[in-house]
View 1: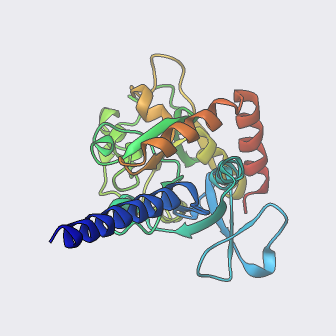
View 2: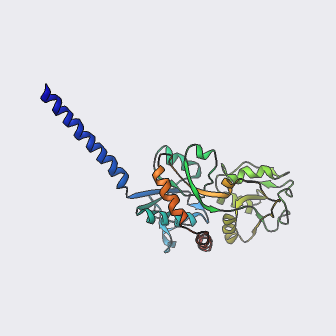
View 3: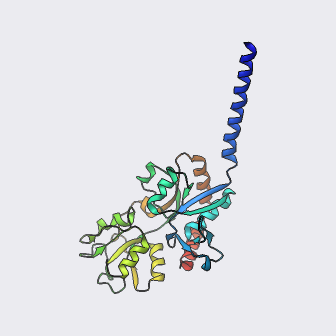
Length: 276
């Protein structure tokens, strides 16, 4: 009986050591980091066809296409600093957080996402990797093109992107008609070009990218006190990761801390110049 107990104890001890070794291997030998983004949100991220690929474009997982933009370059920097292989997947906006939490198909969301309090209930956010301001994008010949304040859009048909701050802040535009939101920025821009709506709200870098490829459009940046009231979390964009990945959160924050504001602005300016 004593021998049986000793053998059993030895077996349990061995299994315990093995389990600990396996856990350590999972934590210490992780070789790949998977990043999710829309791949349709220039200048933060966009898709490049195989025929149009260039040096800065990165392979888009599961496709023959490539992806580029501010988010892509930040993802590359993070993966290199972590000494991990980078995989980038295209995920629709509303599927990003479920892909992170429910299916674990991705490890990080780097997609121009604002760290709102609602989102922070289900994900962890890093410190900001970019900060911006919000502007109105509309046709250059629009009757509202000379607006000086967000209160100068009485009767304007305004549309935002679904489930984003872009849509939320339209409610601050006194007298504007708040239309049902659309799913993505390219669809919104096409609708404005086709005179379905008067305008939309975007972050300044996104607006600059839109104007670059849509010369009939312009944007209005308002002076202090005349623009949108947004919290710091709505001006910032951060990287989202699972709430259990606390060690990874600390590592990424350390990496972001080493990227100066000047470097960030240079990366963004270069992305705007490269965007299709």
